[in-house]
Image 1 (cartoon, rainbow, N blue to C red):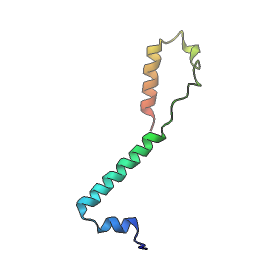
Image 2 (image 1 turned 135 degrees about the vertical axis):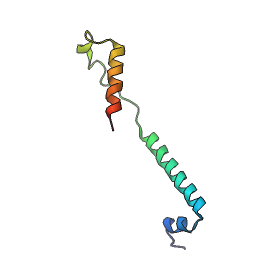
Image 3 (image 1 turned 180 degrees about the vertical axis):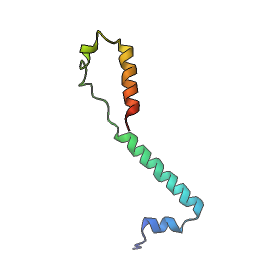
Image 4 (image 1 turned 120 degrees about the horizontal axis):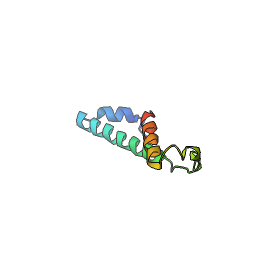
Length: 72
């Protein structure tokens, strides 16, 4: 059985194919990240009811969007 590592095998490929392998790996990593995202929980429902008189639902949605944009 051959003991050549994956990295060694990739290095033996022509440059164009090395680039293709890198792109495929990147695509698989991105796919994995998308799959890791969980469905949102709604256990926070009603948590902002004290702000009901200060903001409309649309205003709250805009504020939430602004906060999400600050996340890394």
